[in-house]
Amino acid sequence: MTAINHTKYAILGLLITGCRSGYSIKQLIDKSLNHFWKVSYGQIYPTLKQLVDEGYATVKQTPQDGKPDKKEYEITQEGKLALQDWLQAPVKDIPTEKNELLLKLFFGTEQTNSVILNQLAQYLKKLKERYTTYLSIEQMITENLLAHSGSTFWIITLDYGKRTTQAAIDWCEVTIEKLKNVQEEKE
Amino acid sequence: MTAINHTKYAILGLLITGCRSGYSIKQLIDKSLNHFWKVSYGQIYPTLKQLVDEGYATVKQTPQDGKPDKKEYEITQEGKLALQDWLQAPVKDIPTEKNELLLKLFFGTEQTNSVILNQLAQYLKKLKERYTTYLSIEQMITENLLAHSGSTFWIITLDYGKRTTQAAIDWCEVTIEKLKNVQEEKE
DNA sequence: CTAGCCATGTAACACGTTACATGATTAT
DNA sequence: ATAATCATGTAACGTGTTACATGGCTAG
Image 1 (spheres, rainbow over the protein chains, first blue to last red):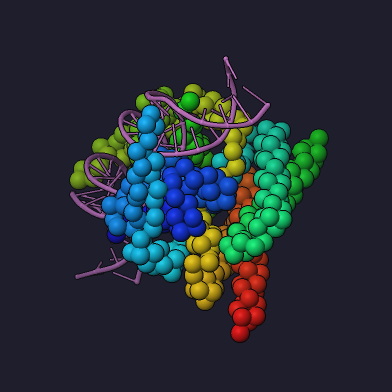
Image 2: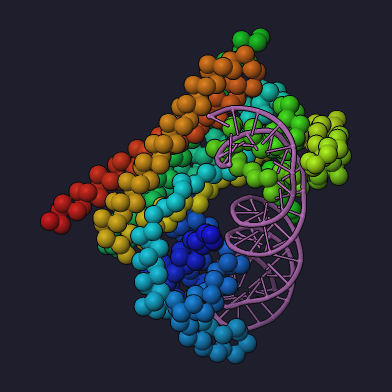
């Protein structure tokens, strides 16, 4: 029972959207998949090789002097079918994020209240930064890319990020207030 | 620059809360940390060994006939200090969950609308199940464990789960409506 | 002239899951 | 009987990050 490697399909999918090299795949991932699927070069290059081995992609290798060969990848018919299959395959389980802050909070009784409040304040700041990032990406898309057919789905994934981040922000603010009140009661 | 292994501290922390064996640690994790920090036996037993090697815990080994030795772990003073340090160390970065559904949605233009709507419906169902689970855990805590000092923080971590899950549910419902309308416009 | 981007790749390591191995006790 | 729970552990595997190696081109 070997699980499916989704990163493989992420890369395969990007091959359809016009990316042809490992480098440009990495760029697109950083720009648009980063908030729900990070991929490093250490995965991309070996995976592209693997896709070729499996017949899901072809590669045109152009020698260049003093530089590594330029490699241009293209998805095959077989690759397109495999991607279709994967897209239709039901999502087995919803993700459970590992959350260091919650882990530390769980051991709250081992800490002073001020340490916890400090952690929460830091976290809140980062959440707000993330939310702002989402907003600016959203603006960029609506301004420049309305013509692009994929932009609808890009907006939808961003919306998910915005909503869950906003919920985390609310939680953070409520929790800070709650713990502040506990502190005052002690005094 | 080696990153900190937080799972090590999760286990160390549970040693304080009264867990003494690998088995009981696993039970407590499954019951109360599971929605933000999953740990398997394959990690627990080697980590406990490591904690002893580092002087953060001691182990009392009781031989038993026909069974593996019973091992009872206890945190040391050094271990407590290490835990304190970790609790106070700032959370470096907020987690980015890997989300298979969003990945598939990102390639929405490669699919028919009905396939997407089906995926979303399945996902929504799972989110609602998760929310219900959170509610019942919460009820269990408020009914039975109000006396326990750690329960406040347990409730707080659960509240995070509830809020973000509810946000995801909202997103799911809104997105389904949005895509249904697109489908109707086509007809 | 130097910083950053373009461009490809590998090796070592860290983290985590799963399957397997073993076997007693207890509840149905 | 048989299923579940108690209880400990390892080995193989899969996934992913980081650091390193190489070097040209371009903009400030």
